[in-house]
Amino acid sequence: MTKELKAKKSRNVKIISLIIMAINIAVMAAWLSNFQSVLSGFSGDQFMDFTSAVLFFLLSLGVLTSQKRSNSILLLSKVAIVSVLIISVLTIGQYLFNFDNVVNVFDLKFSSRLPFWVSICFLLIGGAIWGMHSKSNVINKITQYCY
Image: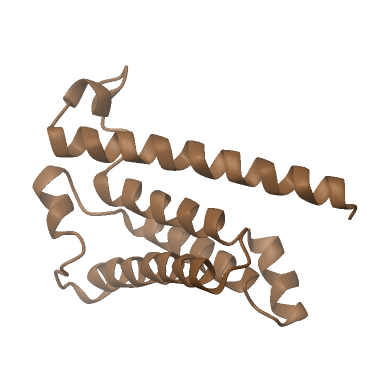
């Protein structure tokens, strides 16, 4: 891949990550301020719950910060992705083992818990992004197809 193509790809990833972060900050702010017209959309149904907005924000933060090569910024990327993985695993465990966890308590005040299949999707996407940080070429190839 040429340097120009890599720079363009990196710029596009940054722009898309920032747009996703801005949308999710707006959704979280709407939940916190109880602004129902933003949350319900045209159909009157809720289009994104609070936990999904947090997880999308963390995923985009992880992708955005993975573009830098500084150790402290890469650590922030890994913390964001591990947070997504932990929340996803706790939510899946909540469904499989029928227990309440602390992660969705804040969300339950506003809506419902994160759906089971959505948490599996977040787990797979988080794992794919985590695999992109790997130094192993095999893991990098596998996670490219996942992502």
